[in-house]
Image 1 (tube, helix red, strand yellow):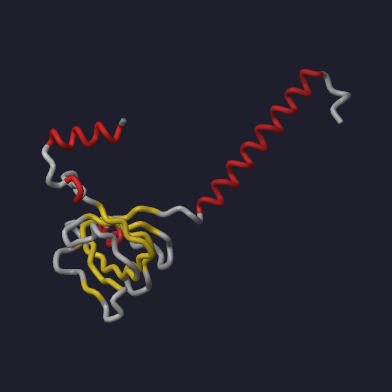
Image 2: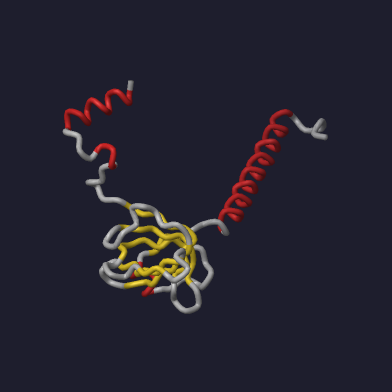
Length: 153
């Protein structure tokens, strides 16, 4: 195929073909991932520039005190996520994480519906920096250190 070209030109053609293939693969990967990307929003972002209904996003903020209600089916939970500037009503059907409580941080994955309600497919509850697993709650710092040392060994 390239037998009529000098070795120097053959290398140049191979480098150009490799670069074109690499750029093409990058563009295909970016195109494929574009539909899978979830943008992160806080309630103020949604109030200022709401995403299109059905667009996959992540909503993060604090669960408003007094806002958690459970529907009659026992599975659907409604609550409000707020950030101090705006509020977004959320509906989630499923088992909520054990750390999900009023006043705690939450990241909900899902999309907005046409009525301005965020329909969550997944909830991720966040704990504060003082979180301690139940198994370790009563231990002193020396006992904790010993427990951690045994875990490492």
